[in-house]
Length: 201
Ligand code: SF4
Image 1 (cartoon, rainbow, N blue to C red):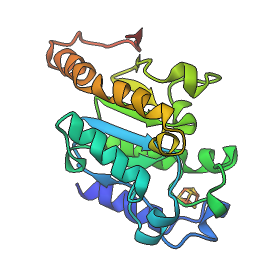
Image 2 (cartoon, rainbow, N blue to C red):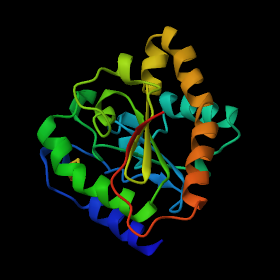
Image 3 (cartoon, rainbow, N blue to C red):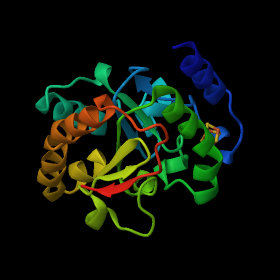
């Protein structure tokens, strides 16, 4: 899709926040421009910054393995982050950096129009829940408008703390059922005007 690529080009040249100073490459995101399922992580790490691609390190390999377990591939989904440039020394992204980059994420969501957004880790969790810890929020699907948000732990957390691996797997294995329920809603006849909806699954 040309508009999505034009947006990616804007991201590659963006200097809206301080993260532009030390990046090697901005990382707009990758995958299907018509994906029904979108993953939003935290920020690019070392390998992502080097290659300009999201989730290409060990955490990316784990995400791909988990996707394969639900019979999906990276090519079928779209993967991005809340900030598109690597924070120095992999520090946490700062609130003003997330705010500066939010417009790009909003545009990506508007262009791709996913049915479901899986947030990975505590920073993208804030897209659906504010003031909720990832320990409490993971696995709690929440519908906002036409999109089902579904928080999961970040794959890097499962690499550093093996106890999280089974929780990540459990949450991932529920995705097909949740996605299917959203597709059935999408396929149903819609009322003339559709009010904002908020549904906990
Ligand atoms: Fe621009 Fe986002 Fe990179 Fe900041 S993190 S420079 S807002 S693309």
